[in-house]
Length: 272
Image (cartoon, rainbow, N blue to C red; front, top):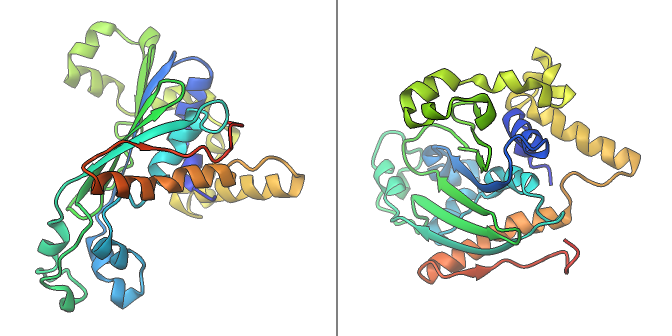
């Protein structure tokens, strides 16, 4: 319920652009949790960390909220829209077994251990209003960190990795065909749309940035505390928490049954 990525700068910028109609009708979003956690997972017995037990026994989209939370807010999930179905598949599990043989492994008792969690889990979600969402979990291979947040609409697109906002009315459409030229011209151009950011991100101080996760932690806590103090609707409520968290169990079932389609429960009982 304190999913801090919902309050990150780029995710909020894209949501604001979508609300303002700059992206047109949003039809697809993508998110990922790409984070090299091999040492952390294998150190589970040493650090008493929950991940090891899960990776040994389960194969699932086991960390969906960083990816899905901001997307659910953008697509008005539980507030006029809802997730309908899910299908997930997983690659084989090789990353942890290979890493266990290296000097980076903090627990040599795990050498030769077999893991159930696939190295890459891919999930597709459909929504009541017709949008699709793709999620990628990648935590047991040598990768750099990224949440790969992307949104695609009828008037433009946004990609977090390049800090890129491409609005059709602001771009030369011919440039879309020249990938290198387009990306080089528009990379890091999100700052050009800063007027769409909340005041917090436009006026953030270095002290606030240093308080955690690049500044989003303070914004998360402040927003929740203000809602509680003022008796306002929580920005992420129990229905959101249930909707996002159930993805883990449903993906596990889908993977176990060959990528079968799983219906996603409506925790609002029709009030979405």
